[in-house]
Image 1 (cartoon, rainbow over the protein chains, first blue to last red):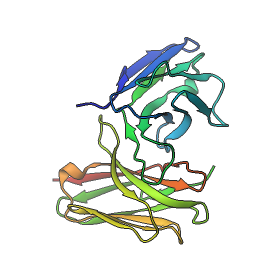
Image 2: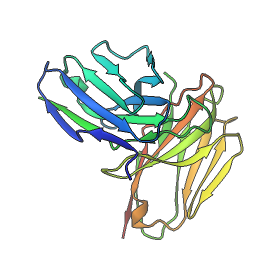
Image 3: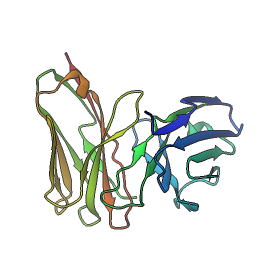
Length: 115
Length: 111
């Protein structure tokens, strides 16, 4: 049974047209993460929520926003996608934050194409 | 940004061959490490959770070691099978309790 679900799996948007990616989890984990992975690069953490507390990475562009309306759902909003935002976006969850034993559980990712 | 390097970037081996890859990171900054396995069109899954310097983990034909003092972890696959084909990502944990991912090693096992 899927524990971290991402929708859609593939998203095509136009340059400058806002887009929202969705993530849901059935694990009841406190922490939800969003990563961006560009071709041949390491997954890069954009931000995470610990419960309702939002933590933005220092180098995450303002163009990227996130919402977590409840424990199960988290959204990634890209306000004005540029060609450079085309990437795989991975959602992950963990029970706690940054502990050495805290495994992250990933969704399958959403591949975003910007035309 | 702390550099986490994985080598090789990609690897093609014959079924039955044993193989290994490396994850390197600045030793002064990291104290634990996770390995993830990512098959095409699936979710990355945790393979090993290594919490201490000197940790050795094994799952079937796959094993891993961690040396935080010198800043590396090795992943070994004995007798590779086609189902081992995947990208293997390492994620060391730094003293600020943040994981940094490597770029991955893409393994293809040829039947």
